[in-house]
Image 1 (cartoon, rainbow, N blue to C red):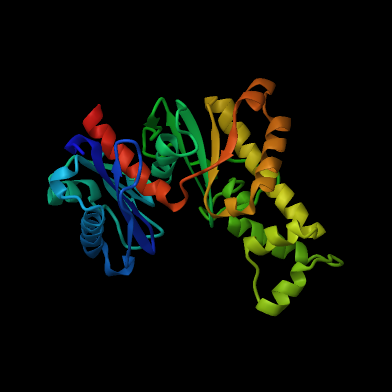
Image 2: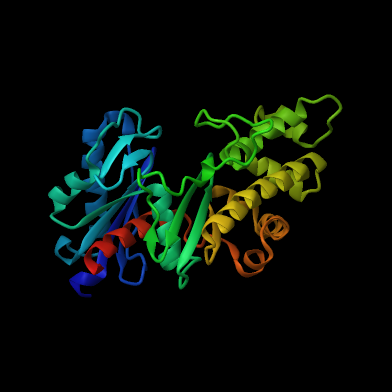
Length: 325
């Protein structure tokens, strides 16, 4: 394999970071994960990033000489052109951390820096559900709702590195829920896994509401989004309503993206996709009702394909663009 065909991607999370060597077609040649240990601070974190990259290269039976470029994806607020994490909830105390330039100096390689959700979107665009399209809007569904937008093969970063914040588009302002970001009416406040649980608790606290979820809550002391989706599958009325509402809220997000960008494809990824094809079909149903007829008919709405590898594959793709531009 030639030097120009081999890249490293690193996806940094609050609890773990994952890296892999990726070939020129988006195929992972390795995948390794090490604990982030974010509480040790940014200096130790940068050393752990370098260690994870080295481990990924070793696991692929490659040498650093065979790596053409590196891509790094992190969570939090950032200045993407400067390659700096400005602040991150998942990496507490990491402020104004020069990630890109530090790793570029350590390895002597062209190094790209990107938001983690943007990188996952790029991964799905390059080697996953969106392979072969020109544009894609990606929603990642977990504790929160993240997003990324790819237009003509490039991440839409925005003027202030805030492009693609799809979890914080407003979907309800007449009686809005408060989002974890502190603002009102965000998609994340209605359609994240955390929101599914919160809305379920609220419903169970209403007088006269019957649900098998009460038994789960009594026996275990808490509920998860997985419990709600499982109860819906078993025909529980309350759970079915919560799931249907969640599909509707996500369809509003998808419709807004379709009417703004008119992408080739909408992709949903993250832990909530474990709900299965039935949930995806309900999202599609509501998209068909909400969106203009032509984009509703022509825009595929799919689940992501790369799972937790999407972030480092997409980060590698961003590195790849540095040497192929």
